[in-house]
Image (cartoon, rainbow, N blue to C red):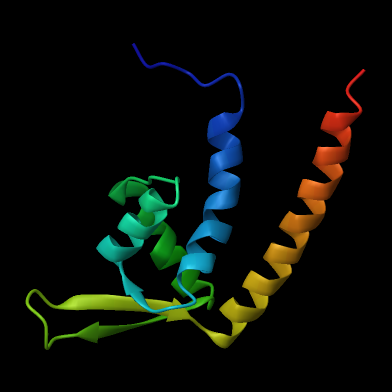
Length: 110
């Protein structure tokens, strides 16, 4: 039987994962190092979630990638594109505003 998340935590987490990934890719990283950085920051993510997300963000023009074939094994490094840098700044500002708004709601809970 599959356990369902009726609290909305999974949906909330999926919503902020893009912002978390963009925040960690201000410095180029390969997939596994990004996975580790996210986990160390308190947001563990499965490879089956991370790699499709990276491909989608690259297809949207928010990321660029290059292969480093000088290492063993070869690694694909991802970094923010110019559009990704702008998107990150906009999402970060929107996140800060949402934190402010929700914080006020939580402080004023009836």
